[in-house]
Figure 1 (cartoon, one colour):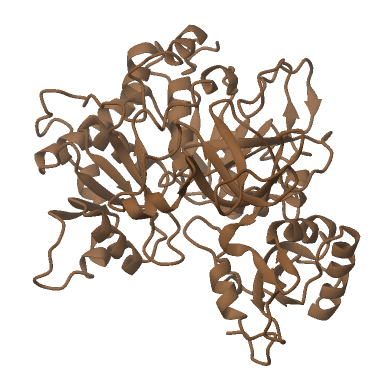
Figure 2 (cartoon, helix red, strand yellow):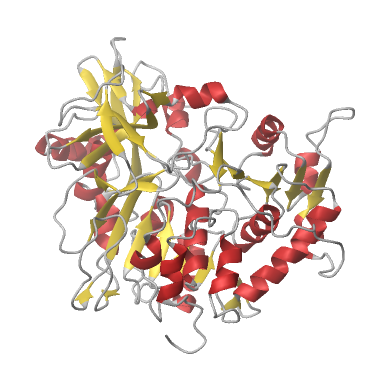
Length: 570
């Protein structure tokens, strides 16, 4: 252990694996109680100084607790009580973490809202949840959606008011921090909301911790390890990494801005050994000239949510270096640690969701790995059963496409205020993940599509993700990123696949017909269905994304609905 390191000693981390009361609502308290390194910088944020240089600021466990208590005094003084949902409609980064810690210490329920969510959508969502109050960076926006006489939350206040609260002003409850029971809800996480009011996934105290215990000994936490988290902390993935790193005492910098222009200089200043993100940042980092200096010390890239594409992964794993003794990731069956330093890094692709509670499938790619498109690997140890089901809930034979389903104690207790919606995702004792997949005889699973994105042609279903893999990996000189979607065919008897592509800056081809021909040659070689058309996204507006950076395929389907039937794209 290096001097002034916040990393918890191994016996402490092993103790966390068996603590019966530890969970998503009190992990900071356990770290404060057992990690002796209370004053070493642990959680970082950053700013640009007057010369435009990145300046880092680290907060120790003791400082995190002081800020948590400061915020909790404000909330308690303003009537927030256990079990009440309170909306956090603030920018990503360190602030959502601090509010989360304060509210859970009171037994309240942080209702985390991505600040990129349109204000009208956010208002509908908060009304559905029934929040007691709203904390926003600019409360005028959400406040203006309420007309005189309409029922409002008890308070709608600027986040600056809570940050400026006198740390000594106000009382804390007699029982503080709050003691959660295993089944109590500790947070609400929303879906993207691309089809209406977002779904509100419940996170429970024990449910969100179970399955993560092995990370205490199988997540890299050696002297010198540092994590850059680009995961939105209004998402279950961001909370999951936060919980893990605070218990480990692993130095972590959280960022709200996921764009490469902002991320790369911070990486150069912080020199992380690990980077956690949704695919959106990895796409940008893998595009154009590689960030060699920024990624010099990276040994592991963590992706969760939707699976990343091999065409992007293969470029990133050429960066960095894997040190001697790099431990086996928790997403793989327990094995031996590495024995020697190797050039390049590893990409850990985890398939998970807020509803699943964590990444439940994992695939690790290194420079030595063979290409295996859409493989998400084996289910992790906490999964009691993973299966591919038909419409009636029966398991289908290996190699047959069906609905991906899991039985696991990590799954959400359900959707807030919506038992009917919860029931719709349950089938034959399983939780339906919303994905289409197949399993091979060796037990590995392959993720082919989201159920809503399957292209139903007259000749049968076409799955968009394997097609995208080929376009990104095998047409790399032409395609930076792409989305394959269904549009009505000209004959009126089914849909056809089309691709909306973001072209490479120096693409040798610019005519959509020439790109289509090149793409279809590669798809034919891969024995996949050819495309009916290619459309070029010439601006960000042509390639719409949601609050988490995920391309909005629903909008693309609407935009190009008449493109093959004589109309024009809207």
